[in-house]
Length: 257
Image 1 (tube, helix red, strand yellow):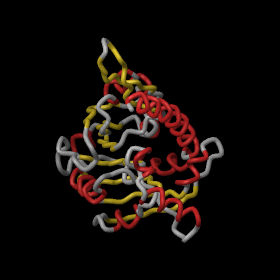
Image 2 (cartoon, helix red, strand yellow):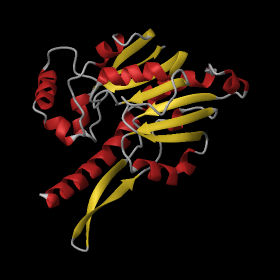
Image 3 (tube, one colour):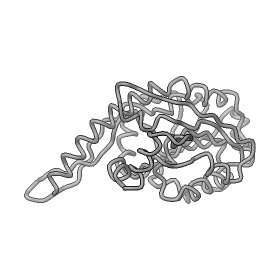
Image 4 (spheres, helix red, strand yellow):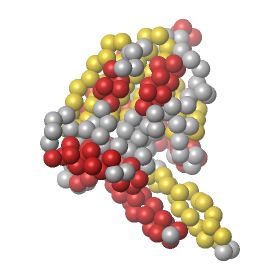
């Protein structure tokens, strides 16, 4: 059983590396447009504003690669050891140079590997890395962040409502929430049926770390009491990663606290 888990992790790691790289390329034009307003944003904190800085919180760090745990057998016992191939911060490269960034991710091993590759994001300053889920941002003070970025987060959140409530809490009044989420097909197509079956059966979430193909992120965000909610749907396909076609519909937009 343990050997099977090791094989599954290695296969998943290879797939995820390819997927993240291809996904990053496929979404490049959309991310450039989504994050473009950050260049003109002024902090809501007067101290940061006087220094020409902004504070950004990213939930669910997009790496452009994979970071998994492999089990190594030493001395007859199983020892967990991180096996990671970190290329860059997939979203961080779009942030302006005046950003002061806090990163939040549930992967305890991602922090050390991210710090080891910090030279790849030398254009901005990462202030903190918090190991936590998006529904528990207790390490971040209320009303303290100018921008929250969350991409491909709500699909795997155990409690979507709690994640959105935490985003609203940490944002300063007038702060911006930028999101990019894959969603289920809006029309009753064969693809939507497949999405529902893969999610309801638990197969897709089991293989892809809790991800669901059948979620309606727009409805969840609309219910979260943000102001100035603006979003659009885009379709993303990539022949290099066929499974991407199962999650081709994306919701991209922003909202204000």
